[in-house]
Image (cartoon, rainbow, N blue to C red; front, side):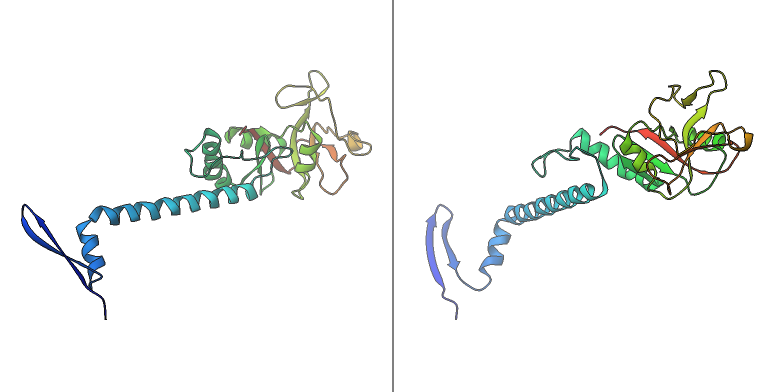
Length: 222
């Protein structure tokens, strides 16, 4: 049996009787204070938003690999979205859905079909990128992990006779395979592929009309 306590109040409007611990008291209290229900809904919604934000941060930590740097600063959960977080979301929404991968400080597209060197570069340019330029050991190791013979953005400049990157800079640091470049059997081997099955030094010059997979690169600083 519920205990019922009755309190009598006098005011200008007359006498009012309040029941405490009476059956249905809590529902009447909610009806009397509709703002209380709204406050509870807001509190629960805010909590769910925090949980979703934490989940997003964890997922992005797993998806992205940035050598020698942290992908996220130590920020308080549920703050306003920072420009860096906004770029990460755009990276996920735009590039990842199209098959790109991120490796600091660029995004890379690895083809699933084969083309000549010129055709491959044309595809990259249409993607507002270009064939990959390898200028660090880390990037060299990265490009070898896809287990494909792929074109890179290095070619023999017929004007200067020097190996040149697609951005016009001359080759400085190279990763030629043993005996390369060699113009095998006197062929005009003016373009470069990267071999995944060899050691760190894995570049090979071959004719530009051969067909290979290719890697596009686009700088994307976060």
